[in-house]
Structures are given as C-alpha cells and as structure tokens.
Image (cartoon, rainbow over all chains, first blue to last red):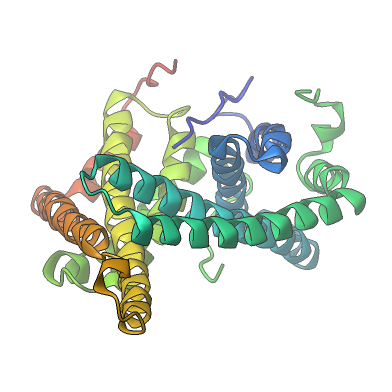
Amino acid sequence: MAKAKKIPGLDSNHPLDESLLKILRTRFDEMTAHEQGTIDGSDIEALHDMRVASRRVQAVFKMFRGIFPKKKFKTEYNELRLLIRSLGEVRDHDVFIDKIEKMKSETVDRDTRAIDLLIIRKKAEREQKRKLLIQHINTLNKAGYKEHFNSFITENLSATGKNFSTLE
Amino acid sequence: MKRKYSIKKKLSLKENLKRIIPEMFDDFFSYAPVVMNFPLRKTQLHEMRKAGKPLRYAMELGEYCFGADFKLCLDEIKSSLDLMGEVHDADVMIPDINLHMKEIRHFNNTIKDSDLRISTRQLRMCVQKLREQRLGEYAELSGKLKLWTENDFRARITAAMNENGIAERN
C-alpha cells in the first residue's frame, strides 16, 4: 500500500480543526496528484495510490464527521464515497489480472488458452469500468469538485483556515 | 458511515485520537472471534478488513502524536490487514476462476474432436495454488489474532498512546 505523504506543519497538540485542515488538504492533494496517472491508465499503481489517498480522506471524514454541518457533510462524503467505489471497481480487476498473469508465467503448460481467455475477459471488463471511472472523474472536475472540497474544509475547519497556506 | 466516534472539538488531535482509536479497535476486533474460529466465513473476514482500514489510517495519524511502541502496534495492524487482503483476494478469485472453468467445460462439451478442446488444467492449478496460499495466510492471521487476544493487544495500544515521546518519521 502507498505510504502516506508527510503532513507539513502538523502539530498534534494544536487545536483539532487546525490539524484536520492540514491533514485533509495534504491527503486531498495526494489524491488529486494521482488523477492524471489514473486517467492515463499506463501504470496501475497510480490508480491504487489515488484510491488509497481517497480512503485516507474518507477515514478522516468518518472519524471527525461530528465536526462538520450534517447536511453539507453528507453531500461531500457521498461524492467521495462514489469516487472511491468507481476506483475500487477498476482496482479489483487490476489485482485479479496481475495475479492471474503471474500465475500464468509460472506455469509450464503449453496450452494456455483457458487462462488467456480469462485474462481477455477480465481486461475487457476492466476497460468498461475504467471508462465509467474516467467519466466520473470528468463529471466531478466539470462540477468543480476540487474547489468545492477545498472551500468546504476551509469554511468549516477553523477561523484561521483562510490564512493557512495551500500545499500546491 | 453509521458509527459516530466520541470526538471533542475543543481537544487536540492527539487527545481525540486517544479517544477514537480504542473505539475503532473495538469495532475492528469485534469480528475476531468469528474470523479466528471459522476459516470459511468470508463475509466476516471481509467486514473485519473493512473496519481495519480506517483504524489503520487513524493510527497513521497517531504516528505524529505517539511514540515508538505505537508505531510497532501500527505495524502489527498493517501486517494483519495485508494478510486479510491476501485471503480476500483468494476468496474473490477462486469462485471467478471456477465459473470460467465451468464455461470452458460447457464449450468443450460442444466440440467433438478432443484435440480441439481447451485444457482446464492450468485453471485447476491456479485454484489449487490459491487455496493453498489462502490456507497458509489464514493460519498466520488466525495465530496473530489469537496472540492479540491472549496478550491484550488493545491494552498495549492504549498504553502506547499514553507514553511520552513521538516516533521518528522518515
């Protein structure tokens, strides 16, 4: 699993909202940093890293949901949850294909047609899921998801949030 | 998203993690008795893994707050989740390969010339290998969970959160 990026300036003794702002910004930036690689699809690790980073954001949301206004939180959380689901569907296929290809390479059998057919089927399914994922990401981007997320956390976490320098 | 943890807005991240992490551990470990004693209860194992992921992420934040023993506890959690992941992968793959094998056999039944039939031997070998791996991984996981129960791993996590000193992060 991808190692979490270090959170700059995080002091665990500072007020909770200040810490959460730093954590969520770092993790969200980490998540979006892998977006292009996920869309390209050339390296399955980019998608995996995006998924893990997004689950780290989700975990913080889950733990500290009591700090956010209920209705707005639900909208924000659901957006994230659906994105994670789309990422997960592609990732499941990536794992399957990767493992089955490794097993195929270890076999001594000449007739590999049965396993080849399975790989072809899984790759076709993966491609369908990937298309849906890309559509999903594009829809989120068109709707200004990143900006929305950032303003959501800034508005709701700390009065000093607006003065907190972004990591980009 | 049903669970609501007892956070206190006025306390720091560190103090909140001290409250939340034991609660998350309890959620996670509530599946342990079934998982340890019933090797084929796939759903419970998967649910335990799902409950373990947020615990892991919360404990990663705890690395900024607590000492070296806490880091060791996190490593334990990580390794148990890795094992659960491997077991889960096998649980997903085996039925899928079996279904594919069934389809190939149906296809083979329509072919008169036996030379043209597709061999399913490789698929059978894959299933066998996955089953063997699962068995080994499950045994390791189960042993780990039993050890946690015997040694009160929860108390160790709680104690690690009350120690002084922060683990060095690289």
